[in-house]
Every structure is written in C-alpha cells, then in structure tokens.
Image (tube, rainbow, N blue to C red; front, side, top):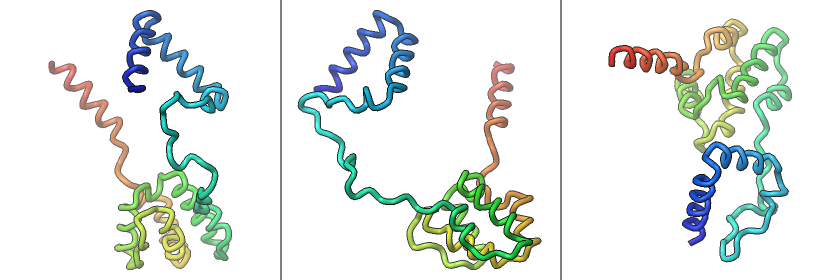
Length: 165
C-alpha cells in the first residue's frame, strides 16, 4: 500500500529531523508549484479523475459582473454594486440557506438548484426592483449576511473556563 509506505517514510523523517523542519520543507515544496506537483505519480497509483482539461466548466459569472450588465437607476446602482461585491466575498448571503430565506421573505421563486451561483440573477433582479431606501437598509444593516461572527464569543468562553479551572 502506497499510503502506508508514505506514512512510514514521513514518520521516519519526523523522528530524524523533527516535525517543524519536515513541515517547513513540505511548505517549501508546495511553494515550488508545478515543478513538484507536476511530478509523475508513483507507479501503481491511479491518477485522479477529472483532472484533465476537457469537460471543465466555465465558472459562473460573478455577481459584480452580472450587476454591471444591469440597467440600474443612478440612485441605486452604487448600493446594488456594493451588495454584489459582498455576495462575491460571501459576506452577504454567504450560504444557500440565506438566499432561500431572502427568497421567502421577498416572495421570490427560489432557484431550482441548490447553489448560490444559480440564485444570483433572481436575487439581484429582486434587489434592483426595490426602492433606494430598502436597498440601503440591506447595505447598512447587513440583513441576510449569515450568522454573527462567533470567534470573539468562543475566545471569551475559553478564557473564562481556563480561569475557573
């Protein structure tokens, strides 16, 4: 088994050189790019499926590109474009659940497939039809922006539990 031999070899390298040095060397190898990643696979190992160039899909147009093609009134164009940037960054409607919630709230037919990309045109068609004030509220209040950031809360809980222990 190739995987077992690899693990055994790595274990031996870690014993000899230490985990930090082996990790650093692996990161350096990863940084070399195609020189290392393009190396021939180990004999007997099957190449991964789908790694060829044929049949690759063209990536879906980003929300910003779609919004830029829309004919928007000047008073709403900046706000809609800002929301498009946020959806591309996944800080506005980061999950499909947020998009389906938006569709329920604004009585929009949800997309047939369960992907964010498939819903962008419907979402921004609805947003473009909103009043400037409603669009600005979406921008200002961060509605449909997913869950709150929980990192600071979990850090505070961890610090508190360490002090009580």
